Every structure is written in C-alpha cells, then in structure tokens.
Image (cartoon, rainbow, N blue to C red; front, side):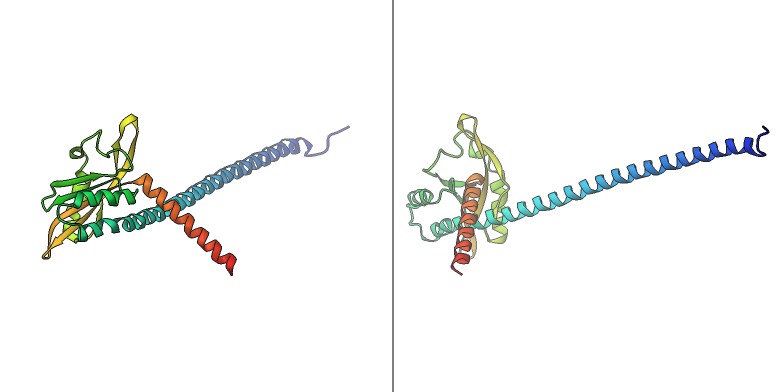
Length: 219
C-alpha cells in the first residue's frame, strides 16, 4: 500500500517536538529544584538570624541583671567608705566580705591608684595568690581612671584569673571613687567573680518568678 502523503515528514517533526517538550520539562524541574534550594537556604538564614537575635537579647538581659545585682552588692562597699573607722578598715572590710559572697576581694587605693590596703574574702582562696595583682590590674586601672572622670562607680571588662589546681575564674572589677572636699581622695576596688554573680542573678530571677506565681495563685 502507498504511504499517506506527508507521513515521512511528520515522523521527524514529532520527534523534534517531543525532544523540545522533554527539554522544557527538564528545565522546569531544574528551576523548581533551584527554587526549592534557594528557599531552604533563605529559611535557614532567617532562622539563624532569629536565633542570633534571641541570643543577643538574652545576653543583653543577662548583662543588665548582672549589673543590677553587682550594684546591689556594692552598697556594702559604699557603706564601708562612709562609715569605716580610722585604722579599722581591714577588719571591717573582712567582716563585710564574709556577708557578701559575690565580692572576692576589696582594695583601697590612694588618689594616684596605689594599693594601700587589700582584703580577700574569707569564703574562698585569695584571688591573686597564683598570679600577682600587679600583672592583672590594667582593667581596674582603666575603670578607676573612668571613675575619677565621672565621679561614679565604673565596671571593668572581665578578665581571667588563674587559681591553684589548674582552675580559674572570670572576674570583673568595679572602681568606686572616694571624695573629700569635692576632690577624688582615693578609690575602693571590688573584684567580683562572674560565676558568683550569675548564681545570684539566677537566684533573684527564681525568687521573682516564685513571687509572681504566688501572687497569681492568690488572685
């Protein structure tokens, strides 16, 4: 039988059309895969950004709580500045440190920043027994320079203090200026271990939460 007119031409044309369709579908599938990959990457980046924002918020809140608790504990140091008897500072400072575990060491410095008296807390080992204070006073010196300019307590950056047995702790210093006749006459420098401060913050937050829960139940 004779072939239908144009049948020989339809075969190659149909093959070309099918090939183009397959290429088109492959292209669409590839675009979908790329689009999904981009969406996954953007989602992960968004979640990372949210996690970072939450972490920064928690860090800022914790820093505020640490500062608040430190200022509360430093009220005892200010009272010592105002009411200590001449010649009795060391004994009174030691008694105060026994009541305030968040302060590991207290120094009294003259107007030039020289240490004239220092007392370590009786609740733990001396803070600078392993490494001399002379090698770890840069941050406190900077805090006292700022305190002299502002006439207000100033916090140092935290720094690491090595302890015996291979241990150590992060410590920050707070410098409180003393005034006489409107001039800076000296400084009190309190050294506060961050671990102790964080424990005090945790206890304060827990107590506040328990108080809030009790008030809610009472209502």
